[in-house]
Image (cartoon, rainbow, N blue to C red; front, top):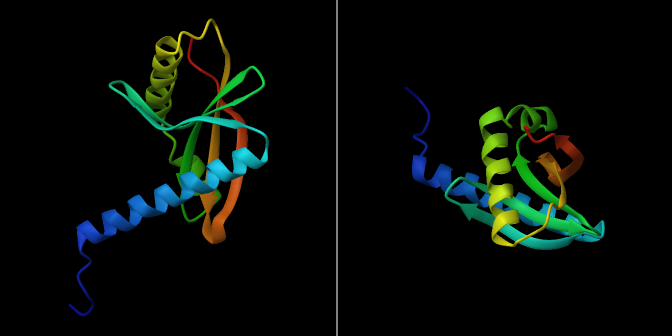
Length: 127
């Protein structure tokens, strides 16, 4: 077979770096829109939130997806991922003793040529 073998470790590293770059682009985008970044890569035992931001009284829990196209990024957000993000958001609110905060879940997609798209209120939290 002609071709070359792709080293899985180096491919994982490239994907990881691409994801970090997308998150930093998202932070810049949110900052330019007037959001204050409260946390980046917030990890809990129940899930992770890429970015936690605040604008006025609204806390925004943001998932960042870097894919070749915006459609692929939208399709990559599964119900299981949403649930984990929501659980991590509840953890953040409890840990920081936020009394019934207004919050929403946003999605920022980063596609080719660093094209960013910010979807406010991308999904509703399950009751």
